[in-house]
Image (cartoon, rainbow, N blue to C red; front, side, top):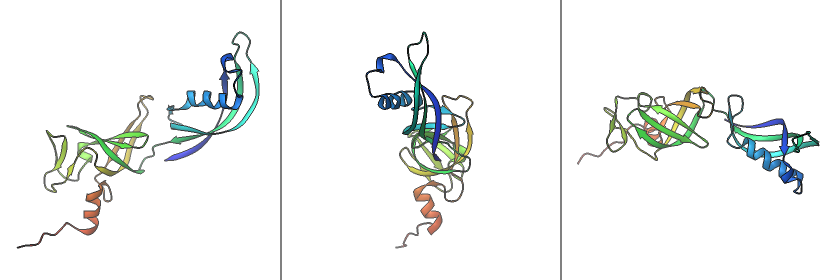
Length: 186
């Protein structure tokens, strides 16, 4: 889920930025610090939307830089359990598929990819034994987040399932709603 988050922080402007516009320098410094920042509380920071308030700067002795207490708004993405996201299959391996969902990537274990016995083919496909459904790179799919781990804060792990109704490849969803395609007998 995307969120707008208000943050208060002390932003450091080095002496090399003293001749520049203060507001622009602060925006540049905030983007440098927060763009791509990941935390359990904020999720993934996408961008700085606005600088709301800048207090007077304070120069710290022996540092030479000015610190400004600043309030700003960030756009963040926080993956939430049971959230359904649309994405594209980025890669397929013998243990599952990687689903790219905008700013993040989740992993669909082979057992969570198709509601069937699934095998991995040499041409990087996941194939259902009885349903004959296949999953390939670049397929557009709906997936549901079933687990989020921030154990490695620089590389959060997101587990996805596509086995429930309304999930999986777009073609499967339409087929489940309309019933299987009927072939004409000649």
